[in-house]
Image (cartoon, rainbow, N blue to C red; front, side, top):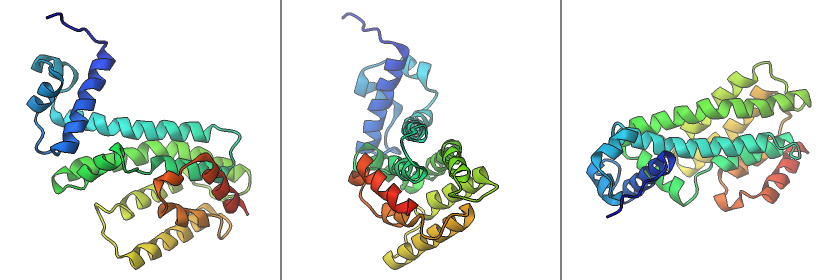
Length: 228
């Protein structure tokens, strides 16, 4: 049988794709390295050339999703045709899990045995998204939409609060509690950024919307509402 040679990045992604599918179907805890090897028909040596362990594979799978979200955020932030509120709306929507692969991965995070991976993913998201959102907030400060001498630190606090407080794998709020916490979060967001009262009202609707609404028209509509 002729051996098929693949580019390193292609082979690495093939391993990640196979592992990700197994994590979905069998669960991360029950998936073994041998399962991954059998799924794509590679030798153990090939696997260990790219990854030291199953844990490292999971980290790489998670990082792919985080990087994709951050790259989407960067494209939005650099779009000069969007207003500050349009950028913020679309960046937040770009991070929302859908009902597909990312949503299924997050379901794995919510398993008790995956708590450490879950926490690491939240921390990485905060670390990587903060600079992008800070750039947008600084634009808002220049345009006199916000008044805040600590844009970076404020975004770190807001991201940390939202990532943990609204994560159903960490907190299970009753619907009334959840709604009240959203309103409180928005109130404090406006206060912290020095924004006009009501300028982030669209975020309340956003947190509870379906991912299918994340299109350019929806973002522009919400952005206009935020600026009124």
